[in-house]
Picture: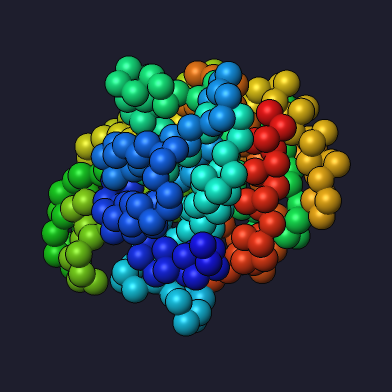
Length: 371
Ligand SMILES: CC(=O)N[C@@H](CCC[C@H](N)C(=O)O)C(=O)O
């Protein structure tokens, strides 16, 4: 397979969570062109699970890739930029899919002793595909449930050739946050007859900045980011509605509960102070990614010996990943793979270095062989 070309074709057709219809069809078509003798392919919603029968299987080794894009308008100017307006593979899932296909091709060409499964999972960016996918595999397709599972995420800030991970906590607990404010709007010239939701939301936005700084132990860590603020309709109408959209990140469940209680308190105060109604929706939440200790040590030792790979023991990050639902269920490991881009994850100019595709499938294939 020409992985660079495949990555570019996938890059052009980003789709958001559970809408990955073209992506699924593209993947199915490519997988259908491989020799089928050892393959079993099943479809789950917009995802796929592929099993490759080993020669003397004692266990099943799994690889998981996410397949969804993000609602971002691409600004890379690349000749293979997204053709889906307002959508972009700005988190590297196009690269992740190409790596998974490269690994699959190798496992088919030269089967290893054990069985292998490759999971093409939808909706990582939201609302979260890992938990329902996991439950489906467990209850409806138990023969596809791996005994151990691996995954990578590109790291634009690390040079190509670097892999980084750690035992235990790698990524944070997350919860989405949607806050809607409703109050009386009206004519711009009669503010005394209205309750201005643009002002109420602006005030709430500023107050939210104190939640982490004043409610979380400085020796702990947390993030509360509001990524989207919208209010009103036009310039001369006082806003009747406003909406804040954000995300909460913590290193443990107790901090998440404390932050939510504090947000709820601030929202009640805004209701009182601005004579309005405020509703909170926590959307999707992801469990922390807790790497299996033994797998992580084994991986770091293996990668440390691999030619052309620089293995690093890294710190935990406040990124979220629904891969946490897999680490909750079975021995699983996620690692960062350096992808040297000037622009980071979720940036409209993210441009991961495709050199990664030249060696990562080989590296993973030998990892699988050595399991
Ligand atoms: C690796 C990465 O960037 N993951 C996303 C996961 C998003 C989870 C959810 N939609 C949220 O915003 O809380 C991230 O933003 O960390």
